Length: 477
Image (cartoon, rainbow, N blue to C red; front, side):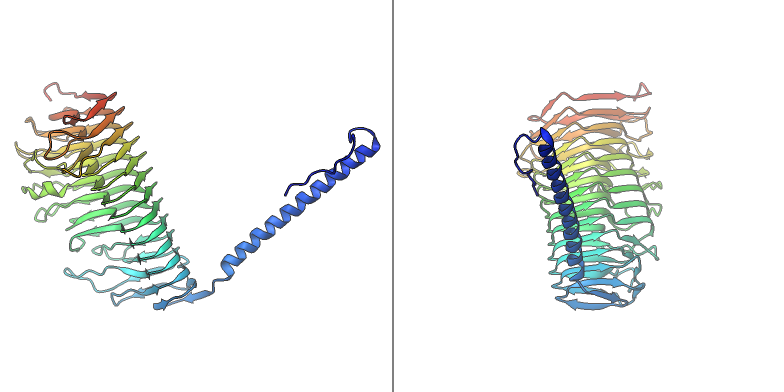
């Protein structure tokens, strides 16, 4: 609202001009006051309209609802004992599911051969969905073929330490946000799963924001499967930012079981995805010593923090990856022909195009405690880029990263372990397409034995303005 003073002649002189000026000022102030009150009323009314048109439905037990609208307010803890989805919504539009802090408890059928998928709330072919303020116990939520979904401020916990479920699953969903959900203080003892487990899974979706979620103080004992914290495939224009993964122990002290892998971010076939501002700290893979003699452990890729396969135009930037420790004692022949690092790597990009990796902070990545034979070795890599022809064709841009305190973790006097700051080459080709510049790399052999390489690549890469510092307290290292 623009209020212009009434024109008058020479308002600065004489009583008449002064009076007209005062009147105009009062009129202006009055219009400002009316505009302020009107704005407040409109804002209040708009808020009332957006909430009042949804009916509040008290919820106290399981049900199925089709083509519904409303606010579903949980009134008590709900327990499901039939290994089936408790709340099902199909074709819903404008639904808010508010647990109000109550628990959704899955006590379905579990044994060594069959594990409940843990889906407690399901939305299919729905629009404008919100699920918040829930405590999932051995349970989770799945959303398929939906749009404008918000899963916010939920807690995932357990009451049985051999049950491990995917808590949040998003598939074929668009323009959605998963934020401020918490996985904290969890302990799993040999969880029984068939292949692998993803805590938070996103597939075949676009415009999804996964941000400010927390995974903290989680221990896995003798897991039979690969463990992924956040993962998926075939996503576009999605963002994974400001998540925290901290204090994770992947303990493997039953040496009769196969060694398994641990990934924090694991994605494939993505287009224009971004990974930024995430904090990953104190990750310990297989921290109990086992002597395992099998080549299968090489392909398991024991520990990766960010792992991207067959992606295009993805960016990985401003992430903090610190205090990462690889397996305990291993007895695995190191295989130079392998396309991926044997054991420990902060960022892995495989068969990708136009990936940009910049301004990440990688600190204190350690391979292992000891190596138990003369032909064993642990490969520690800060940033690893590889791939297959013809996938690995477009340039990968790596710049402005700080990679500090990489340690092989080998105590043998033979040349076993290897530490690389940045690796970039294509499998099956004598050349590679990568631009590596303005990175800082610090490798600390720490008196241990092994091979240290600042940047390893092939013909065709452009490498310039990097700073590499390699030190050791043992002159014979």
